[in-house]
Length: 160
Image (spheres, rainbow, N blue to C red):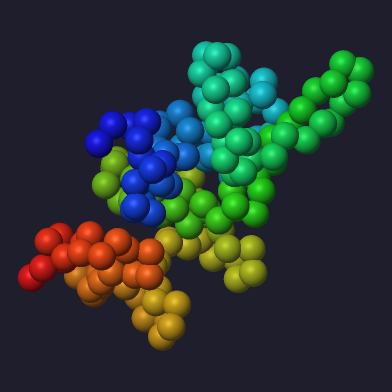
């Protein structure tokens, strides 16, 4: 499978990766979740080349993850805001952050903590079942073909 073909795969992960699957895109999203909005701020905080940043922002806008909104008229300048689709990536990004905290933070601990505004406590992301509320880990899940699967597509991969 070639990188440019990911969006055509009959796999939700492959399609998602076609939008957010490179390191600069994930770092742009990290900054967007930290409320960075303007091109110059993204560039300064990331140390990214203007061309690369422009490509990633255009891609995220075309994918409907970010929205380009004018904040100045003369000359026209834009900022980039997360859309509802973009905000839906928060669980993915925060889970990656917390995984990195667990495995790569070092002796001093995580460089950034996340406080839940409602209760005032720092939190760690936890995947839970939408139906029963129980915590879910990889060994607690049994995948099976969904309504979008092609006939026989997952049979070999899901066989015990």
